Image (cartoon, rainbow, N blue to C red):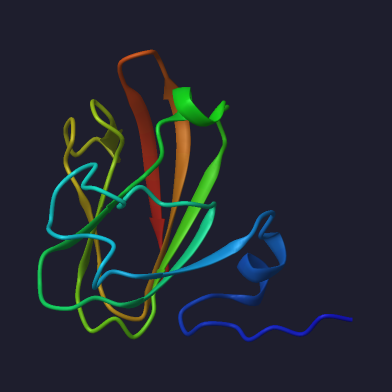
Length: 134
């Protein structure tokens, strides 16, 4: 049996539904600013826990479904765990999250979780919906 901790703001059901590798990101060196597709800021797995973010304006970007072989219904979960900063989560270039407009970030405050579901995509755009934890 494998035991694992449950990050604050994440339900047991969400932990049991994880179908990939959990990745812990430290945004002190990974993302250098609040911008879409910043160097190294594309999330590397379907479940990411952000533990550190130095200063304000830190951003990460959802992966381009054309580059990873995406299908509608794909889910990427981001946990902002004790980073001390609000995070901006951007869609891939040309993408849209929850009808906010192309290339517009969705914000995630400290100690909260958001799941991003891929609704549809073409070669130039993708449509996502975000579901936040309470």
